Image (cartoon, rainbow, N blue to C red; front, side):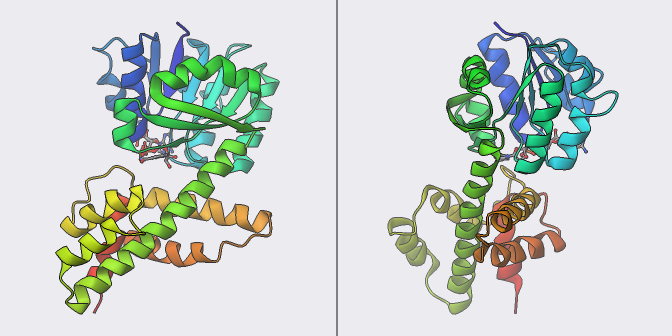
Length: 289
Ligand code: NAP
């Protein structure tokens, strides 16, 4: 069993840590808020004092943090993971990040004699808890083959999409498509509420017709019952949309629907819903006069 270090124990990282322990990997954890890591000590994990120490103890180092800024902080600097990595380790960046940053990180990893895979995930908190994530990987094929058993300990499968940055780009496209659907669903439900249509009948129509994607089926009941217990924090969707829009510009495919969706998510953040589930994007629409 390869020795694994996991950095970042938020909604996703905590579930991934549980699966790695269940699979029997010797596991070192680091999280900015140490209490979240301590919770795994009894289950057999070692809690490192820094990302650097976590990397020193492992052959595979995984990061699952919020955004580019957090990723830069945990990998670089004197106490960052890159300062501690062993020659020949494989580094796995599973956070949803910009392709530009993960390519830069891959170069820095190469200078340390390590391969870096960008391997963000589809699936949410519940999939992380039950080991059903799906990994979208970019980087060297040899690195993918080596870490596949570890990815499969945390997920149902993984796909190798191409060179460094391919996984990050695919994840942003995936979340861009999701965000537009969710924004449309929120506006549709607000219109149903305001117009006085029968909401049960309306829900039945939407949830049994063409719009009923897996995402709409999951989020419509939450929006209707106003249950915003967090699986995926709303503010993270703003981050994903802004990274996706930058990629659209880079490839001269401006994502015209993205700014409209982002406007709704930004409005929800401004009104204090940023740390609730992204289904809370509907709240400002329910409230508007
Ligand atoms: P989360 O619950 O908000 O956790 C964020 C993690 O990042 C925490 O461990 C947090 O540490 C850490 N962090 C934030 N800022 C940091 C900083 N400046 N320095 C060091 N650590 C920092 O987020 P999540 O839902 O687990 O998501 C993690 C990543 O997966 C994100 O990139 C997200 O977009 C992506 N993702 C999420 C989902 C989902 O459904 N939740 C699905 C697919 C992909 P603290 O505990 O100290 O705050």
